[in-house]
Length: 64
View (spheres, rainbow, N blue to C red):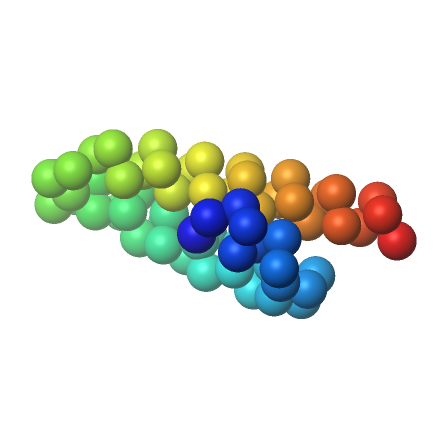
């Protein structure tokens, strides 16, 4: 998800997005552990998307 899309969401929407990304990241980690993950770069992109969402969430909460 792009940063502009995240910034357009409210706090609850961003928190839901973070939760969904964390579930996806967990699933990818399990696939990697069982040798089923072919494209390991998705772990990196998912981890960075979580960090991006958390940063925007912190910025929104600090603004209030």
